[in-house]
Amino acid sequence: MAAEKSPKGFKPLINSERTLPTSARQVGPVDPQERIEVSVYLRSPNPSDPAGDSQYHAQQPGQRMSREEYLADYGADYDDVAKVAAFAQRQGLTVVQTDIATRRVVLAGTTQAMMAAFATDLQRYEYQGITFRGRSGYLHVPEELDQIVVGVFGLDDRPQTHAHVRYYNPAAIRPAANANAVSYTPPQLAQLYDFPTGVDGTGQCVALIELGGGYKDQDLATYFNQLGIKTPQVVSVSVDSGQNTPVGDPNSADGEVALDIDVVGGIAPGARIAVYFAPNTDRGFLDAITQAVHDTTNKPSVISISWGGPESSWTAQAMQTMDQAFQAAAALGITVCCASGDNGSSDGVSDQKAHVDFPSSSPYALGCGGTTLTATGGKVTAETVWNEASANGGATGGGISDQFGLPTWQVGANIPPSANGQHIGRGVPDVAGDADPQTGYQVYVDGQSIPIGGTSAVAPLWAGLLALVNQKRGKAVGYLNPFLYQNYQQLASNQALRDIVAGENGAYKAGPAWDACTGLGTPDGSLLLTGLATE
Image: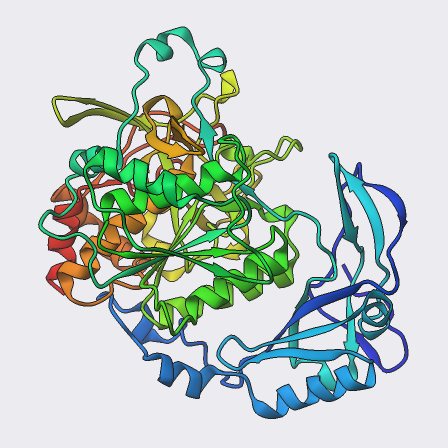
């Protein structure tokens, strides 16, 4: 769609176009004097893409750049920052923060000033019981900032994502499945997936991105005491005024936060766990990720993300800017694990088409799909695609991206055309793990011990595994996707990746090698470590 006509002296900010939800209802004007903040992301001054360079697509994973090298080569250009500051002053806005590494300038001002500065109209809307500040159409920037500003976030504060978590609900599951329901502690799953022993993640930091809810120290102490494990070091990091704020209801976002911490801590209790709390908006999500990637205090080697939404619910500028943040993570040797969604191949969209979930669809994320796991005597006896969608119990997300093209490392993986047509794009997921709430994870949240599933559990499962691998290797694995695909035949023949060949998620069926339900399969952690140790 062509960009709309801009006011004199302005140009449309390409890819910033937003639409309102079909059933959104306008409920009134915004307060013109309300103070709001926006994050303005700037272009990279270096025309070469750090993650696009051949060295970052190398077969051998590992640390590629120091943070100092990245800042020198890819930090924001100071002239660009100065132009944004001058623009802000003219518009009556205040520069609150400038972050050269993330190429982000935070501006504050009244809604009236913001609407004038970016030539947009903000109104109050109500949608599904939630009131938000929204906009439609394009944002606009002054001509002197055209090509400098790549994204502006925070004007529209509608909820952007949801947690990919599913609770065990006997009433919603087939009777035969209920008869076999079981839940596992993270150490039990680590044993079933043969995770490396003799390591506990010491020296590593795992970042968790959370867009709501919180945790209680007493809950963590109780849970890990029950496991007979020392409580890991957990620190909360505030992003855009987000806070560790437990709701007190296990069925709230508290369940997601507890699941993430309990899984990572149960697998890698020696790792530092940094929990980045941000508002559930596109700005909050993006700022949390860029802050985690460039955090020089916690320095995470793995980031776990269990929140997302269908690609169709995002602006192109948000997906592209977040994808660039993941490219920076790849350049810095940080692995990003993302849940692939819990609503099958539709990803919860009711248009009868197939959709994939973002951010798992970013080529720089390790997309994590879900299985149903059966075990006897401490051994996995069967594993199939997780799909209880017919009983409203959820199903693993996966499919073909409409936003991102086929990565070079997926060229030989026989990625099929999208179920929507002949388009071949980025295939999701890359790997999988137990996600069915009937064979789910035993966690402790808001004073209750409950089983939880969803692909939300698979991202921290893989994050915990990689913390162990990183410790054992003595260096970070980093951008793992190229290695897994380029070495798939050997990894599969050695059973380092266990192929899942039974089941479907709606539009796609499991089969030999990669498929759009469980990717390349589930891990044998020790054998995967062996494969990685040879590089």
